Image (cartoon, rainbow, N blue to C red; front, side):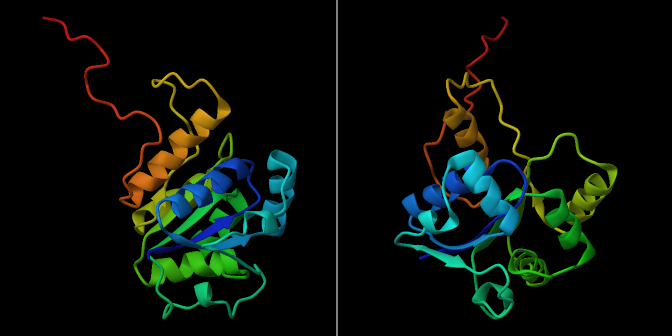
Length: 192
């Protein structure tokens, strides 16, 4: 069974992280979930839930302060690491090599072991230091996948917009899914 480390940090957009955890479980993945203290605040403000309410079969909630957790070690094998949403502070720390909590440490483990790492920033606008950090991380093989939903599929709800972003994450993980419509090229009539 594939395993992912998912960290929900302090950027607005906790709903993306919640939906991602659910989608991974639906597709047979196990999730080691990390929620930072600011992430927990946003889970409450935006979703009305506590981190413990995300725990169910296949989801293990980790202590963000536990640098001896399994996700902190390169010898522990995970198939993917996703920070969703990724705050600017978390992105800056990862880019600078600072691993002062489990969320940043697990991301740096993914980088050093050359494993799939996806960061989902949800800031607007981006500051120049964060843009430079994301550019560096991208050059180092990290997938930067902003929480920027598209509208060409005519979303009818916030859930549709959240699913658009989560679908892009699942695509990066090579997970077949049915979240949203795929572009076929026939959406716009061709001119003869």
